[in-house]
Image (cartoon, rainbow, N blue to C red):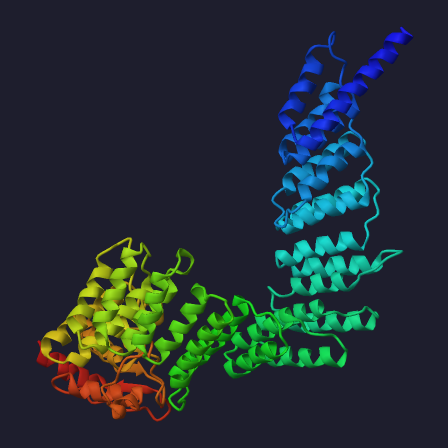
Length: 609
């Protein structure tokens, strides 16, 4: 019997040596075939032992068949083989290797639970790896479950554990949970938070825009004597960017210099992003130049932040009558695009879309269309998207180039890009500015005729009414009235909950053409539904408070009208559009109200009858 045992041991060692050789040649299929023969033909082959399975697991892992290795490992207890810590150390690290997005988190958790079931001691490093995998996969609840499992198994966490847990909270924007874990880490004996702990906690504050808290955490890290690095500062600057605190981001850059912390390209990119979010384009471009002077690598995202800053500034400039920067801004945006190409960085959809937005603000429709053509002729990844097309159509609209706008609108359909209300509004604005009221009217009815399609909104109404009102003539006024009535029925304008009574109506905030249509609608409705008159109160507010809610509409050079206060315009319309004229007054105690007395309304109604 002794001789047979020795022979059996020698025989199994020979089999294991063969399997080990297969590892070098990655013959995983042969390895599985051999171990299956050993299991099924016990009289001919020796029974596989734990070393046999370790060799097979190694072959599978080296052959990049990690899923098969995991399944084999989990099946061992059913075959009467008790896996050891070494068994799991073969497979689990292989699951984690190059898994930057944590796609194997589920298998990692499954193996960890298997270790608990099989009473295999789990080292802290293995717990931390699994928590990190859950963190990368944005599975915060699962990461916390692994942390709870650690406590059940009486395993003491360490700083790395807390860093991974807080990183999971940061990835999901769970600031409160991150802050709670930071406090727990501070309470632990034998270790405490490090710069990574604070950095991850600050990252968690970004989604909630907690810039004040982020600054406090940075100050806490300083007071704790933690050596600061560029990453913790960059994390704080990113929170400032989210919270639109661009001055704070520049102050942090100065603080880095004061504390001898060297800013890297990520830091500068974060500052440029903060400036971009607030439209501080000159400072953003200055930062871009500083990066070049320092020889830092600038990526597409950083360039995009700078162009986004210019785009936001151009939109602001477009609405600021005193500003003359619009012309300069679109040129600067195109310059930055050229700089990207000079640096061998190819603009993406966001680069082109932001540049097109700048062109739209300046009504540079030719340049916007040129950029669309570059995108159309480029690789698939830069093909124009909805934002780019909408920007280009808006550029045409502001220039009154309705034919080019319609062409781009049709090209969107050819590119299988779904329209939305913003695209329709941009196109209708091109008809308005291009003097095509019938086309604007037709587009309104096209939108209204599709119950499940894109529905018009108040901007659509503003542009269509402006187009019809500007065209003049009874036919166009009649169309304007029908459009306004449609809008009321759809609750786009004068919704039921906005009027206390039929005799007190709020017109404040309406554009002048819409206010005109509203006055005409109100009087017709009063005539149709009531016979007992009251004083009519129209709330207009005081001053030039009417809003241009559409894509900027060309005013035909009528600066007098564009500077007219809504209150005075409504009084003019009441005299001009009605026969007999509806003369009005301003109550002594209510400067923002236009009042039409009861007897004047009765006279008008009598003539209508």
